Length: 242
Image (cartoon, rainbow, N blue to C red; front, side):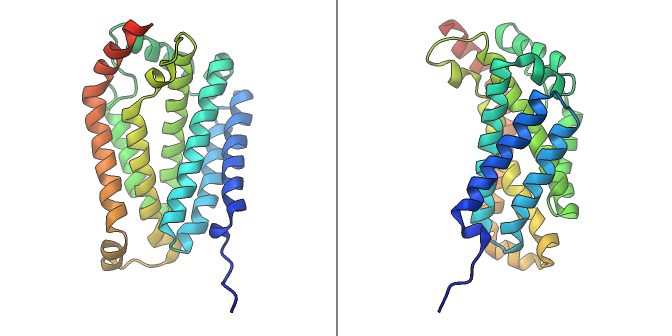
């Protein structure tokens, strides 16, 4: 008896996820397209994510998100490292954000785009991930996720330019942001499922998706907590190295 073929079980599918993450990030960024960049990323990731979510394959959905976000973050970081002016044009207020990010690390400025600097933006982001994902099958949540990942990669690449040494990559990584993004991914995959599958029974999700729910909520909470206490320590820890 042949096993029913599922695209989300095919290794080629995950190769395509990485490929489209690379293309939809690199091409609009190099062309300095601030509107096309998040639009292309959002639509493509939404389609890719909908495939395992519609089949109720939570593990495969998280693998899809993980591959996409890693490739997107690395691509944005590398392009920023080698061509910062191109990326500044692809990010809204890119020059201002890059300057603020460098001031945070090398001076005494606050970490830009954090909850304590722009609480309204973070609350809107959380609402977009939670409520937006639930009412749109994940589409709105994916938009906020890709935008936040672009900013994270932009920040990493911006720090890699002036930093040197073996620890420069570690110093440039905003651990608090990465933890929050991981939590966002879990919440989006979970909250997209009811609309995409037509299955709204709360009991099912509490029984079948409870580990994912607890991990995702815990990661978001941890990311926000680290965002409050870690940036100043991170800056102090790595500045003397350079």
